[in-house]
Length: 429
Image (cartoon, rainbow, N blue to C red; front, top):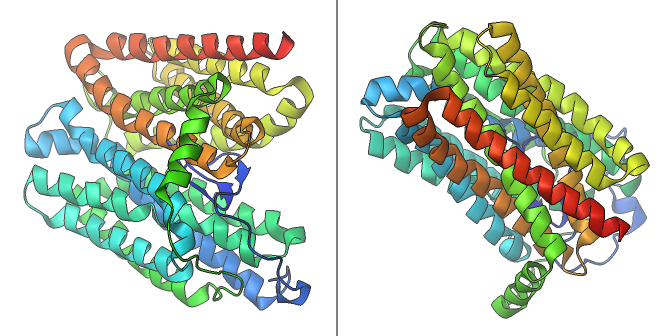
């Protein structure tokens, strides 16, 4: 949370839906001959757009499909809310590590085949998570799912940057980002709808099979790489120096921390909203609870507007605005009415997408060289916020109820406001 899809690689950085930083991780390749580009209006362009939509949909629906199922896991395996959150936290934690490493290794591997194998294995692990009888077996399958999925977002945008005519790159990227957003939303909502009529095991199996077919369609439709050149050799010290250089700069650390805080608030609030709304006095069904994830629609719209506003008013004010909107939403969820709770959640989603779209876009601008390494560090912190805070929030919910979750996420939002204020003052100094 999303939540959120939002990965870094040559060309772009991507995550849970929202505006993404444009970035280069690998050394530049030679400019392709003009007539070798995949151009808008051709059959290859249409096939590439559909393939990348399938890739984004499969990846992000697999990552986040378990979020509305957390209460079901707690009931099926007799575990606490905090323990059940590991089904998502382990996936995003291993995904963070996988993307981080893939950003360094991607130039030594092929594009199309790597993405296909990543999607295929992730779908298989999702099916395995549904059929394995023990909680620890499910966690292992979900952890492996996150590990193998890093190969999709870490490579998809590199493929786009290398193969698509630059004049039409935005169209192709838009289809991939749309797939990300659609997958992140429908993976959550679809699970809730299916569990109304069947078990969560069958729902996860069905999604795994759907994503298996999506992987096959992706492989058949995506044109072969024409411009990819594998690099021989690997210098780990080059990458360590690049990452270390970014971690020495206060401006970069602030952006990384902002990414961590944004996803911490977003994922924690969505995780435990499912428990709150499925318990007394609401007793909502899994289908009804999953409808809260339709609030993603507000966020997807806000992310597209945030970029234009940031160009007009500056990035620090938009980041501050994002945290203010999130804080207002968090506080609003303290009310007992369902309408107020939904609008609070919608505000949190809106503020998250505003903040994330602006913060992720600021990383490439703020980095002084090795911009791809900067994006990969941002995504590492971003997904670690989902993984760590998403589970820690369960301890707060278990021992302090919803008020404790609000206190935790509101504290994150206030810290984010402080960081945004520091960034604003430093710009004016």
